[in-house]
Length: 148
Image (tube, rainbow, N blue to C red; front, side):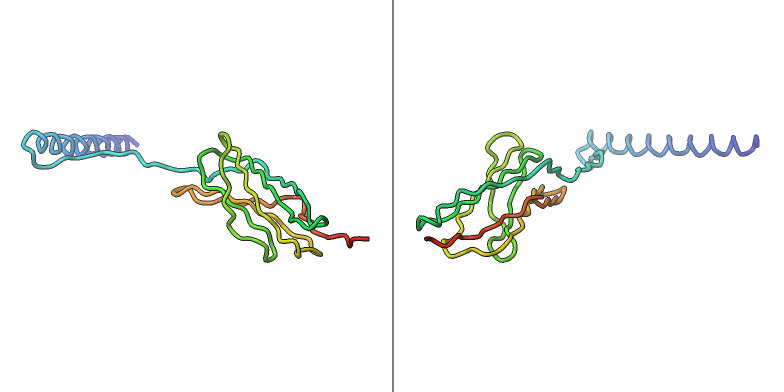
């Protein structure tokens, strides 16, 4: 047990000497314009978070217009945000940040698109931390009532 404690102390002492030599070598290199030793902490990024997503529809198709779908997402600020409407309506529609962490995007649905239930999926992306995806819990239902 005593021998083990002395061995651990020697290892720790050896580590301290190695760090001191590295620092001294780096500093002496600085004074002679030769080498610089830079120590940087590791940077760890958390995945972006999305708090909520919702949508609303302003539908003027019965009057010969179009339907405008507005998607609102609340997430971490200063990210790249997009949404999709599946199946086959839209992919990667750009959203803009209207205030810190509040994103909005709009898509005009053509007058002839109806008769289906669609899913809206939002995503936020950080260049180094990656992407997070959320599905709107409410489906987008686009049925056009026939004119009388």
